[in-house]
Image (tube, rainbow, N blue to C red; front, side, top):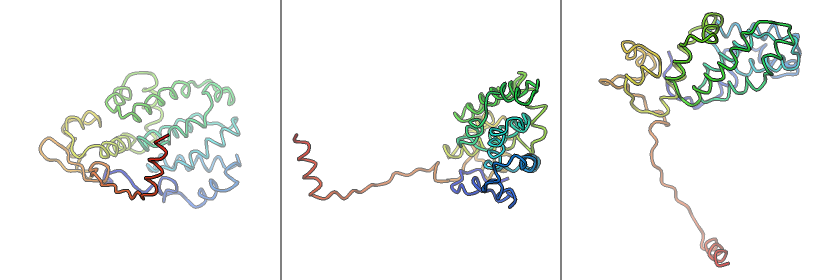
Length: 250
């Protein structure tokens, strides 16, 4: 598992190294608006799900094609895209961008003449989970996620089993957010925020490149959790100061 420290380089977010060249050409050329390419794009999404990879811009291209060709919309694909976006980042725009390309669930189901209500049930649920993630309410997130609501049940039984280690992805993203704010944190608090049994927290901490000292997890310095005061020197010319004093006299 990678070291859980905030990333400074976003190139992999825009153009992931795992993206096939044929997909790159599709989403960056005029063919991105060709609905006959939908099967290739959807197949690529399914490979992301299976392999635990992520390509936001390719997934947005699918939703854009659904927007222009609503009769081709696939509710299951839509849910999978939202789940990938939810587990890919805490503060990034991924989920909002994906949601912004969607119409009302009822309109989507009407266009494809489907009576499967899963999409209608899940979109509000996923939106609420995203809000809890975005505001770092991790304990509340796990309470909703592990709840017995119909939406939680559908998500965990119908969709998540297809994803490679979805809970690990969520925990890792939460860890990245924690690493940007803390240099040390109690294992007890970390257990609640990551929904891990107390006996497994220490092992997880070591897996993500942190260390354990007593009852605390020590997070490597990463530029966000070790902010240092800086000295700003400004060079103000006398002519500029004269103009400022003159302006204040009026």
